[in-house]
Structures are given as structure tokens and as C-alpha cells.
Length: 403
Length: 64
Image 1 (cartoon, one colour):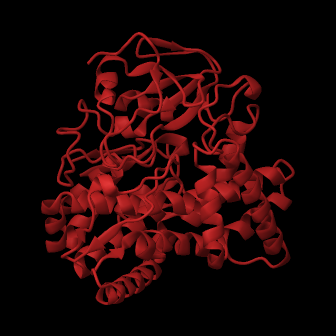
Image 2 (spheres, chains in turn red, brown):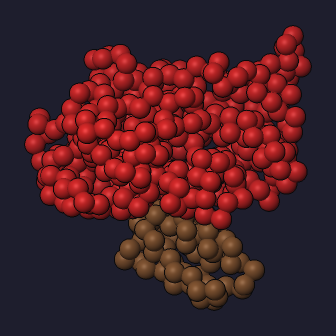
Image 3 (tube, helix red, strand yellow):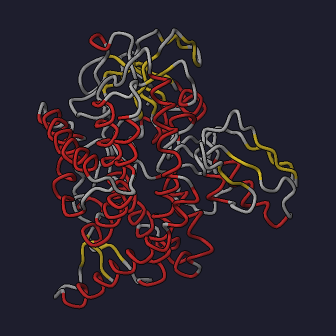
């Protein structure tokens, strides 16, 4: 296989939810920065090699905004990572303010304090799964509905101060916003989500609580440079990213472990000793979605022999970078014992996932608890039978398991 | 072992404090790394090296 002179048409079809298209290996080797055509039909650069993806994630010459947004290449018809966002002139200042506001609420110390609460929740969900398992004639339960979905939702609702009883509503909106196969309905979902969030924001203004949305409402009313619509957009982003990503990662992690039963058995033999490394390997190899993180060049730059022009769209494939054979031995193998301990699963640089400590806390507790309490856990279907939704985060509709 | 941190490079991710909270902390005001122990005992090497490898700003240096 070799790289054609034509731009690579995205997305690259994958064989199943755990493996990537074989073309990525060729691209990393022969064209680490390749001309591509986005699902929306516009030109973009696709970056696949670890070093370049990491360096460009940390490079301030690229941003989420575009000097001329109306001329920017579009990526998909989804309402997330679909095109430029934010104000070109104030992006860095806006980002710095946002991180300053949010960093204390998501600090490692706060997340560690949240650990007991997360453990109680996980124990409760596992109790219920055990009950449902005993009652089910076929002894099959859905780990997605019983644990992977409700846990991150409950935790992010508590942190943000969002009502958990609204979960089907905001989850439905999140799925539609991230869906690239429903045309303009994705943007309609964003509008509906903004409307929902505006209601919540105003309820917090009237009756503030000890939560992140209340903090943001207070900060916005005290800072003229902090635009109201930007605050609402940020709150939508937090509620979206705060649950959708972790729901999917619990699903992917379960699939990796239950399709590598030697690794699952090693974890059940020593949950506390092995869970951290297992979670890091799940973060490295789990590859949700078909694209990558979107940036626009804010100036001309030369990378790996390619000249990227100001305004060009750049898709940084975290999925491909995390399987770079020049960085990882047996890169495609799920191996928590590997020597390499770095990965780009939470990104890199100034935009590094602000919820990383939260996600690591949840994932460590989930997988240690499953290993301790349900050591006989098995998949109750084949990988091919799993339904993956056409969203940027590639979520599983259900995850049938038994023991 | 000797550990040093670059507070100017730090992006306040807090991953070091999550990995080795006896060696690293985050400033309350802005989340920037604070070094609690510049010479941790050798048995902490693995966690400290994980913290350095996991730093999204490559702001931690470890000399075993």
C-alpha cells in the first residue's frame, strides 16, 4: 500500500470499534502531514505522527479560531469541532481567562476528594447490575446503561450544578450535536442546548450554588470582556465533554479488557496494583471517533517538509499518534505493562483536557471495582455486533455483558 | 533522585499532583505546579517518572 497523490478522503473507515484503518500506518511512515479532504468536502492537513501531533498541539501558531471564519475549511456537519470557534483577536486571552476560572474546580486535590463519592456511586451501580443479572433470564446486563452512562453523568452534574434528572435531555442534545450524519439538525441541537443552558444559567443567577456554573455566572457578570454567549457556550462544552467522553472511554476500556482476557485476569488478580497502568493504556489505545482535534494555522509554518499556510485547517489525529510504532513497541497491542508511559489521550500543551484528573479518577475507580467485584465478567456479544453511533466521539449504543 | 519543575512552562493540568501528591502540589490560585520534595526517596522513582512522562507541558525533569 502506498499513499496516493490524491488527498486522503476522510473519514477513513475502520475495521471495528477498537482498531484503526491500516492506512494510518502508511501515512505515519510516508506522509505524516498529508493533504486530506474533510467529510464536508474541504481541504485540510491530516497529521498522524506522534512527534508532529504533540508539537502542533503545543504550538501557539495554531488555534481554534480563524482569521476569516467565513472562509475557513469546514470539517463535518456536526456542531462540534466542525469549523473555527472563538474570536481570532482575543483567542489567547479568552483561553487564559477560561483556564484560570476553571482550573481550581478541576484540580487534582479536588478530584481526589471526590474519590469517595465516586466509589460510592460505582458500588451502587454495580450492586444494581448484580441484582439485574440475577433477575435476567439470559444473565445478560447492559454495562452501558447500568454504569458507563450514569456514572460520568452523575459526577459532572454534581460538579457543574446541573440537574441529573435532565440527563436524557442533555445527553440526547449532546449526541445530536456530535452527529455528522444528520446535516443541519446538529446545529439545531446546539441551539436547543444553548437555550437549555441559558435557562440553567439564569436559575443559578437567581439562586447560586457551590458549583462551576454558578462560579462562571458570577465571573461573567464581574468581567466586561467575558461575553454572555461565550459563557453559555463554555457551559454547554463542559456538560457535553464532561460526560460523553468518559461514557465512551469506560465502554472502550471494558472492550479492550474483555477482548484481552489475559489482561483482564491480571487486573482481577491485583486491581489496586495494576489499575493505573491499565487506565493509561486504555487512554492510549482507545480511539473514539474518526477524525482528530481541529486547529487552524494562524501563520505560515513549515512542519516535516510541508508548508502549512495561514488559515489552513489542521486535523491532529490523536488516535494515529498514540499508535506510532516509532514511539511505542508493538504499538497496536493492548499492553498495560509497556515501558512507554506517555500518550496524547488527553491532548498536550495549553489545551490539555481540563477534566483529565476527573476522568482518571473515575476510570481508575470503575476498572478497579469491576475487577474486584465481577472478576468473571465477559462480553455477551461480538465486536461486530456492537452498534457505534456516527458521532465524533463514536459512542456505543449498548454494551451487553455477563458473568 | 533530583526533581525540578519549570513553573513558567506549566499549564496547570495537575497530573503530577494526581500521580505523586507527596512530591508535587498545585498552587490554589492558578493550579501551577509546586515542588514539595526536590529529593524524593528512590522508591518513589516510578511514580515521579510517570508524572514527568505524563506532564502535558514537559515541565518536569527527573535525574535518578
